[in-house]
Image (cartoon, rainbow, N blue to C red):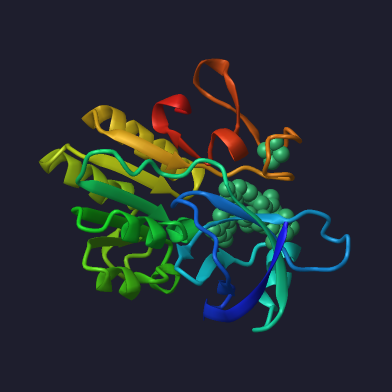
Length: 246
Ligand SMILES: Cc1cc2nc3c(=O)[nH]c(=O)nc-3n(C[C@H](O)[C@H](O)[C@H](O)COP(=O)(O)OP(=O)(O)OC[C@H]3O[C@@H](n4cnc5c(N)ncnc54)[C@H](O)[C@@H]3O)c2cc1C
Ligand code: FES
């Protein structure tokens, strides 16, 4: 693990933080970092986070506070240090054919800023769903990137009233081409996989599992894929072709 100094901690909404670190990192969108910023053995392990943005001299993660590890990260101040391992795993393939259809559920939006910038000059559509307007974070930032954004909220407070997969399905019914990249809760990913299959569109899903080492050593992240084949999500994912899982 390597130490990096925190440049900025932005609380974008209660319980949602973007940590910007100083330093050069590299990597491709969809890869992740194991991050630890507490000197004690509690919690014992670093936590996995998608690369949110990578710039020449800085990189960031964007997360929701869930338990003890994320609560400790949320308290970091500029100048504090964090240990970072990565970039790890397999990211989104960047050589697929457009248009690119991004589907994000909640904090699943985290890897897409880096992805949109990497796919620059391509036609990009973002379907972004959350429970309510306050949880559609970064909406304006994505709108400013010049891509077409389709928001959806379960309470109807912004955009389509309902699950984000409905407008996705309607969109593909008009134009079933390109490649889908999705990140969000498992039920959303399973539905994206079903829709992609129905419209014969290639889909890549960024999946989550509990991760202890991030290096393929501990078996903590093993999930069962299609046909009963097991895969290590930390080394064979987290981005996986939809047909390997659902
Ligand atoms: C490859 C990868 C990339 C990720 N990227 C992001 C990101 O960009 N932004 C973000 O907010 N989160 C991301 N996560 C999830 C993040 O790692 C967890 O929220 C974090 O580890 C929770 O740590 P904690 O100590 O705060 O919570 P804990 O105390 O460890 O757990 C709190 C609660 O969260 C649940 N939980 C913890 N980790 C996971 C997990 N991996 N999957 C499902 N449920 C979990 C636990 O079951 C428990 O209910 C990612 C996970 C993976 C595997
Ligand atoms: S997290 Fe240890 S094997 Fe994947």
